Figure 1 (cartoon, helix red, strand yellow):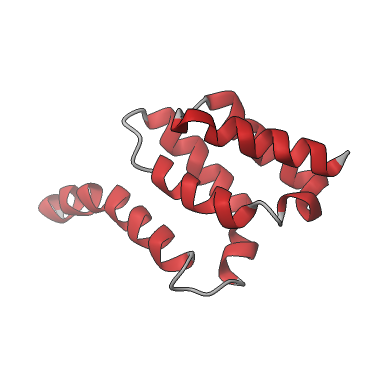
Figure 2 (cartoon, one colour):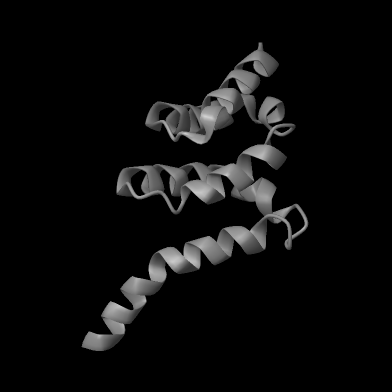
Length: 106
C-alpha cells in the first residue's frame, strides 16, 4: 500500500511538469505515515520541488517550501552538492528581494 501511494504521489506531482496544489499537499501528508515508501522517490521528487520554488504563484511556492521542510532531514543526509546546495540557492533567491527591501529601511 505504501509503495502504491508513493508512486501515485510522485506521478501526480511530476505529470506534465504542471504544478497542482493538491499534489503538493499530498506530498506533505504522505510523509507522516509513509516516509519509508517515499524515500525511494525522493531523488526525483526533491529536484522537481526545488524547481517549483520559482513558480509564479505564491501559494505554490509556499506549499513547496512546506513540503521541502518535511523532507529536510532526508536532504541533509544526502550529498550536499546534489540536493542541499541547489535547494538553498533557490531559497536564497526567494528571500533576496526581501533582504534588499529591509536593507533599504534599516
